[in-house]
View 1 (cartoon, rainbow over the protein chains, first blue to last red):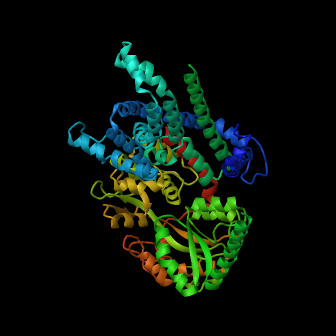
View 2 (cartoon, each protein chain N blue to C red):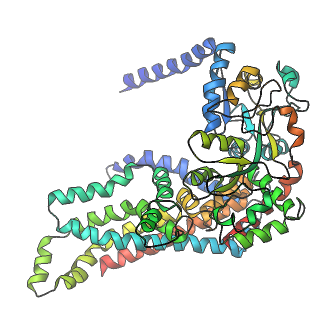
Length: 277
Length: 339
């Protein structure tokens, strides 16, 4: 219908920009991954062999996916209760929650990441508090550990989970909850059978965003995670910028992209299943 | 619609032709790559005003780490995004191998005689030195005597490690290998020790993150240059520089003119002014703390040399030999640290 009256032309500027600045470089990246040197003179599978034939790189892929999955889990566990409070709250509290959800987006990721060094460090806020309260006798390792990194990423990525979730829950008709209650459904049963299924699209959208963002969070992974945790983004940067092995860097970058796309695809498939169930 | 568009185009065309003409009449322009952070601040504050007042040259700075400059220049394939590189020895050798520099004529530098012999050659000129050793927090740990001390139990839980990605990291790790009985050709003793201490070191991180972690007390010992030590102390951090018993390592930072640069004259003047006595003297002081290469300028108090002429006493490295094996060291460091 829209194509008939030429409305599709409205999409042209963005489509053109995408083709020029996203698709074309992506094709170049693909070509580079099949080169044997960065001048694109000789071709071969060396880049891909080095990328996928090396247990260390495969482990990095798995670590990266694991990090994304755990961050999704942590953000979802915290965001769902908050979204329920938001749904039940009056207009003032709603505004406060929404404000708190959006606020982190107004500071740069770099600033948020460095703030976490101050919080998680050996002499940081958490350790100082626990030591002062006598809960621990020596500082616990938080910075440069996987759990510390997930903790930080959970805060950093939270808005990406919370905002779609709030939007999904806001669309639920309160009459449905009353109907469930009047039919004898307990609060737990109403949440499980009515609210959660209807929140699923928001949850899945949030999960996709958080997963893609956390698994590619180059700065947070490097600064908070450190050199003992191996993730693909740092490896790609190192091969491209320090070692100058562009074919390997390109193959690793495409591996990262494919892995994230696969998870995002699986989530969107799950989303359409839920909608049609 | 047509009229509107035509007038717009005409206006744009006029603006397009008028601007460069005005700029050309007023002054010469050039672009120089500069390290982000301290270098960027220093050269903008000291060098850029001097070029403007003395030569009517307007410098635009492009903040890029050395490896990023090389990567960008290579990707540009003969159409350099800046006129002058500033590089450490490793990337310098890469730049020479990749043919990224114009042939440099030291005779064009009026300040040539102020540099030690060999500090300006057919590739470029030295503009600053760096002295690398051990930095420690004197209120938390005793002064380390040498590189091997870093692997002792009293230092390991407070040590911050960085890999072979930077010049200072690479030469520090080479010096550790030597102190542990290895050499540039045999890094096995180093990697064995790194694997042993890996679970207990305070941090393994990006080089750029180390000063922040030192400031926050996450680490109390690291390897770095005198510049970082002086800079952190000036910001109130408890930090001292220890010269290892086998000697501190030193290297020079060099500037090079990009192949295909269309601003050769300006680029030579830029490098010439960079080594001039007033500029080097200003850069050596608070808050910049550069180590001067100009023989007439005295380095700051933290630098364990009273003139660049003493650099012969320091440990130096052959980057033509390091570069070919560095990729393997980087890969191995990744793997050993990942456990």
